[in-house]
Length: 632
Image (cartoon, rainbow, N blue to C red; front, top):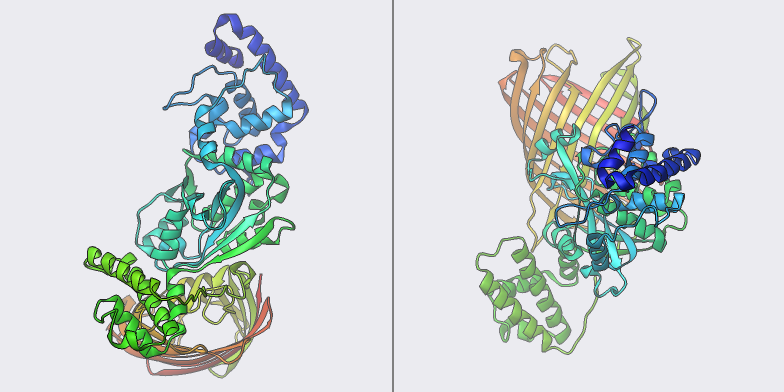
């Protein structure tokens, strides 16, 4: 009855009976073929099985995405309501679309499965979609992975987007392509606020499409992120279906979740629409790390055509500086800032090849500073950039040598989850330890495929069993631990920083070791005296809270310093020290000296040895822990 009334309203009395008859035939055919249970229908509607009870639910959180009132949880009801909607004769305008056009991927899939009779169900022209698709002129799809950027809370793990490569483009004009992006709709700049709201779905997530060069400028130039481009092998029919589905998703809201329903998860859902047997999203039921999704795509047989490396501007700058002696780098900086002439003096005395390299570095440095907003007079900077280009053009020598691509791509690094078992000794007794870290990299983990000096961990768990009381207790739960050690040099002067929030055991003056909440962080400087050494120093503050502390809290400040040392390709060590004075609440001092080492055994396993001496509240603790780590 409801379906008949719907048709009556859509088509008027004379045509209602005929339309209703054909709709009944289509619904009967769909039921016979069990299309509501088809993987592709579930992919088109973003249905996922419920965890605790039978049935499915769509990840789409916008009511406009569904034609049936219960479409979010009822695939059969949504399919039949969608078929009914296709009989609408609503004309397309700039403000509205006919349902065949609004849900164009569903329409073409159901048309293929049911063989729509155009005489009984006329096909709409969908002029707006056709114009959009013509502008894209698609030939191929490329998965793009900008590396992690620790100063943007939305990109702590990296990011993925999808580039639509046009038929008339080549490698020289690839920047003119368009990119499909899914992200949280927010201007939030606070990493802590973003993490909290993002964990609990506090932001709407939306798909968007924009020129690829704008994204490259954002990632490569402004955020100093290297970019990897993975060209994929999809058929023309699959590409067409993906783009149709992107059109459907344009105005649709998804609740954005930082750990699972994030940018990478929803891009994978597009691939599932094109090729349901891939089941990419089903491989990530708990959390989704962008590098892991890239790994899943590249490991799928026959899906990766090739990978291309696009270095960040800061990477290019460091590469050019590394080819010159320190005094030449200093000269390039003086030339960039207009503090040295371009036609006489030290630059004129250099051999032609050396002069070309200095001028190229000067241009790159000034452009880098301009893009970072550190130039006060943009007109003067633009004029100086032209002068540098003219000076370089007068030299006949060529020196095209871009930074080499890293030997290990991000998708080839260690997997992000880590489990460990260990045995150790502390305070004169032996203990055993279990470790689990869902995500995703610390400073001692194998660095290949990750950013040097960057560590990001969430929910790192350590359980310890002590021999004397035969008890298993929580030793540490790290909620978030982020470290960014960015080495400074003659041209680049980044600030290093760290933040660590979680629960940990603390030794008190009476010898007790209660679990306390601790939030600490700091900022400082790091240097790279040799390729094997990274040294740093930080000023830090800390807050501890526990009912076991005097006044229930302790507030302090201090300093930390350390060095990361690569003893070989498989062996890394960290020597670190920390001194802190808690001057408010529970007043006391604390120091720590640690030597930590990691030896990689295989790509997915490593040994870790930690030797630590702590002194807290006049109590000294010595601890040794040998652990075996497995990455998965």
